[in-house]
Image 1 (cartoon, helix red, strand yellow):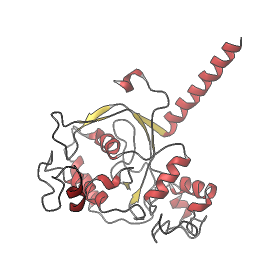
Image 2 (image 1 turned 120 degrees about the horizontal axis):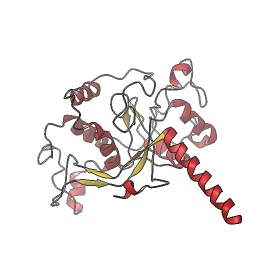
Image 3 (image 1 turned 60 degrees about the horizontal axis):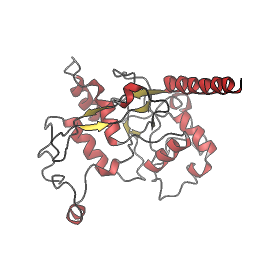
Image 4 (image 1 turned 180 degrees about the horizontal axis):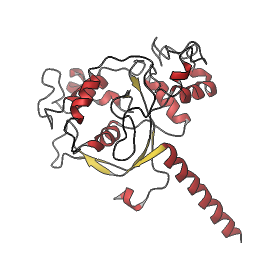
Length: 264
């Protein structure tokens, strides 16, 4: 009888976890993608293990819950080392979204630092996606029959940001049901500062010497993938405390209940 009760409890717990994932996260199955820059390996494809990814970017309302629970991340208290002067600048106070609160609540939070995004993710029991995970997930539209997808992404990159941003879910979902990966907000990744490195770093270590400023396209896997070049350049120009009006984030998580398909 005791074993039956324990089995029922475990079953309910797994069902609850699965229900939560279905509601707010999407399982990205394991697979591979071709990075813009690759090493000298025989197989240049980058393998990505299965992971769960937030269906939508984090909103102002969700981030407000975080700073209510974690006062050290409120605008008046966060150390300058962890957030630049633009941190949550759109809010009217530490816990007030201001006159645009109705629009902001469901809009992706921006003007937050990498440190704050990382702390929020940990508070939710999640983490930031890696560059490889984000690029792999965002490439779900690759091979789309519509050849204008890449051009629309570039058009959005070149469009000035007007705040407050539109609500999450206002662009489009990809083939897996993840929304707004392109067209609403740029997103922090865990290893954003590994995109490009300095000459001093190259001289000091055993790293890829093709990553230099003057010839950024040399030996790129696709010299026409201008959108990927822009993402590399944007990430390489950031520091962890930067707070940018068009830069938000979403969370990732290792699978809680991997399926057989996830491990292939």
